Image 1 (spheres, helix red, strand yellow):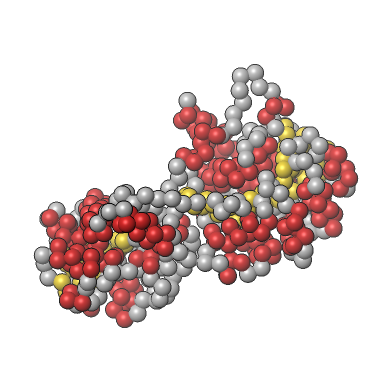
Image 2: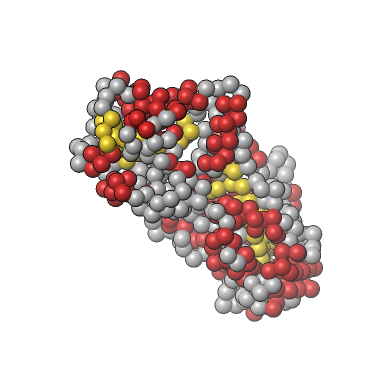
Length: 480
C-alpha cells in the first residue's frame, strides 16, 4: 500500500503497545539508532559528522547512531544539550554505548564538521527552539534529521520558530504529517522510512499507484463507448468556455466513453468551433439540465460557471438527480452564504474540489482551528457527507469515515490557470467509468501530478491531458 502516515502521538501509542507485548524499549532504540547510522553512512559516505543529541528518545537514537558510525570508521563527534549525568532511562543507556567524549552543545557552534546529525528533539517538540539549539539551526549547513527536523511540529507541520533545514530525514515505521504537509515538508529534504518492527494501523496514507493501480479502469474485450461511462460537463457563458472544455477533454483522456459539453445558447458556437470528440448539447436552464444529464453517470459543474443564481440552481438540480457530481470553482463559491444548505444536499459519492480560498469560503476558519490540513479536510468531509479534495502542492483527499490520502506527487509548475479544471476532468472521467469517488480522487491527483512533472517548466493547462495516454499506458503495462 502507499506509505502510512502517523502523528507523533499515534507513533508513541504504537510503541507503547509493542512494549506492553514484551518488546524491550531499549532494544527498539538500538534498532532505530542503527538504522540512522546505516542511512547516514550510505547517503553521506564521506565527511566529519557532528551528532547533536537532545535529552530524550531522539537524543538516544543519536547516541546509538554515533556509536555505530564510529565502528564504521567515520569521524564522529557528539554534543549533548544536557550533562550526561542528568540523562535517564533509555537515553542514559544509549549514551553509555558511545565510548567517546560527550561535549556540551555550545561547543558544536565552533567545531569543524561536514555533516550535522540533528538528534535534538524530533517531531514531539511543542515549543520554539531557543538558546544554543536555535543558533545551531540558524547556522545552516548539511543536516540530516532524525524523525523530523528539530523546530518543526510533527503533527501541524508548522515551524515553531527557527528550525533545522535538513538535506535528508530518517523516520521510523511510518511518515509523519510534517513529512508530507507544507510548510514542514519543505524542511525535511529526502525522507527515508526505516522499518524497526513497530506495527502500524492508520487511516492516513501517502498517495501512490500502489494503492489503486490494479483498479484503474480499462475496456474489456468487445467493449463499446456506452459501456465506458458517460460524463457531462457544464460550460460557462460565451466569454468563459475554456475551463469546461479543459475538463471535458481531460475526462475523455481519462477513459470516459462519452463526454458531452452542456452549453448555454450564447456559447454554443464558440464551443462547437473548438470541439471534435467531445459532444455538444445546448442547455439554457436547470430544467433542461435535468433532462440532459439523465444518461450521464457523472457531471462536472463549476469551472467558469459564473457566481450566479443560475449556477446555484444548476447545482441544486444536479444534486437532486441520479448523477454523481464533481463540484469545483464557482459551483462552490456560489454557496459561500448558504453553507448549511449546501452541506445538506451533498451525497456520499459526490466530490468537491476546492482550493484554499474556496475551502475557506465554504468552511470558515476550519484550516486555522484544526491542527493541520488533513484534520481540516476530514472535518469538512464529515460536515458535508461527501468526498473532499483540498487542492494544493500537498493535496488532501478525505471521506466521511476519516480515511484520508495526501498527494505530494506534483510540481510547482501546476500552479497555473486551468490546472484545477483538468484535475476535475480526470476525476470525473474516472468516476464515470465506475471508479468509487474517493479512489477516483486519489487516482486523479496522482495522474494530474505526474502529467505536470512530465511537462515541467513552461507548463500550461492545455499540456496536461496530452500526457495522460503515456502515463495510463505505463500504469496498465505494469499490471500485465
